[in-house]
Each structure stands twice: as structure tokens, then as C-alpha cells.
Amino acid sequence: MATKQIGDVILDVKNISLRFGGVKALTDISFNVREHEVRAIIGPNGAGKSSMLNCVNGVYRPQEGAITFRGQTFSHMDSHAVAVMGIGRTFQNLALFKGMSVIDNIMTGRNLHIKSNLFMQALRIGPAQREEEKHREFVEHIIDFLEIQAFRKTPVGQLPYGLQKRVDLGRALAMEPQLLLLDEPMAGMNVEEKQDMCRFVLDVNEEFGTTIVLIEHDMGVVMDISDRVVVLDYGKKIGDGTPDEVRNNAEVISAYLGTGH
Image 1 (cartoon, rainbow, N blue to C red):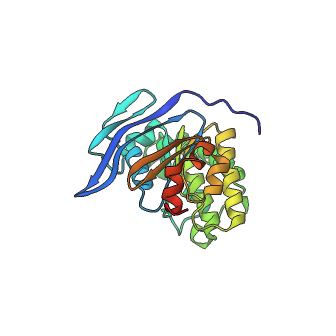
Image 2 (tube, rainbow, N blue to C red):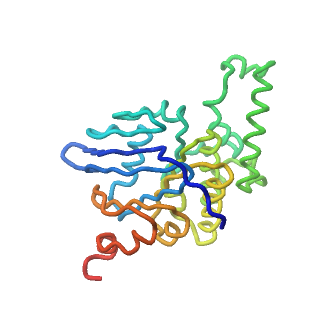
Image 3 (cartoon, rainbow, N blue to C red):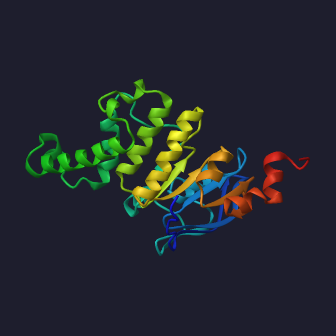
């Protein structure tokens, strides 16, 4: 694979701590993400990985620390502002509209880019119609890219799980994010589906130039597709570096395998 150009830091997470009552979900977490890289967050169940993504995209408000995105620093992020700034997200549990078609689900990702008002959209007149056609064209490109042309008009609820995950990725891509947060995009998939999703993640990174932060349990996948890996355990950072550095880190090995190994 051709060497890609990793750019400057675009996301800088500094000393983030998050508590729910007396429970510490995250303690003093710092790491950064560079433009155009695939950055993995790994760790055993309950390590705080999804909580970390939820702080980045404004679902949770950390009690301490700050997040800097493209030079702007925030003590907490706001979900809508995050989307406007160019941070997209998929979720562990699919939040798709099961009764709506594939194309209509992915179109919901274009909402941020739609300029015409609801009245004009409803009547589909003049500029509103031209705008919708332009957005549909963009969505059709994503459908082709994700190889789901045969299911364009199919209600999402009728699709196998692996394809629903692909639609979820498509909806996030429809936002045209500069930074894409993927929360376990391969959870529950068989080997073939995982291979497909790995390919799409790498293609999104290469062809769209999208920077990716990825939570994933499958260590083989992480080691294959990530540029750098940050490791959490019980809400604390225990490792950070290239896949090889992390693979050989004694504390990481202990967290995953238990100290007896």
C-alpha cells in the first residue's frame, strides 16, 4: 500500500475526566489525532472507549479537561456544533430509521447541508427541487461506493445486519465529515462482513481523505488498519503508539490477557 501523508494534529484531547456520580468513567485521558490517520481506541469491556467518543461528539460533558478541534478549544463539545464543524459519528447500536429505504436513511445525513426551508422542500419547487437533486446525486455516489445499489429502495429493517452497518456508515459519510468517529463498526459481523467493512474504512480514509477514530474489539483488525492506537483500561490510558509498540507493551498485554500470561 502506498505510504499516505499523515498531517498535523486536528483533534487534541487533554486531561479529560468524566464521572457519573461516584463512578469514574475516564480519568485524566490525553491523546491526539493527526489529519488523514486511522486512530484506534482499544481496551477491554468497560474501559471507557465509547464514553471517550461521547465526550468528543458532545453527548457527555466531562468534568475536567479540554478538547481542541482544528485550533478551537472547548471544555465541552455541543452535539450540533460538532456536526457543523465536521465531526461525524456512527453508533454501536444502530439508530437507523428501520421503515425508511436505504437512500432515505442516507439522505438524513445531508440535513446539515440543506439550505432551503421546510415549506419549499415540501412543495419541491424551484431551488428546493434543484437542491434535493444535487443532494440525491451525492447520496447515490455513496451508495455506489458502499456497493449497496441493489438495496437503494429497500427498507433498512429488511436488510441483514452487516448491510445495515454499511448504511449507518453511509449516513455518516453523507455529512461529509472531516473526522469520522466509528464506534465498533464491525461488532457482530462474520469474517466476510468484517473484511468488507475493513476495506470500506480504509477506502474512506484514502479516497475521501477522511480522518478516522475507530473503536474496535477485534485486535487483528486494529493492528491491520490503524496508524496509531491508544489503549484504555478502567478509564485510564495504559498505552499509546504504533500497533507494534502497543502489541509489545507489557501493561497492555496484562490488561487483555491477565497478568498470568
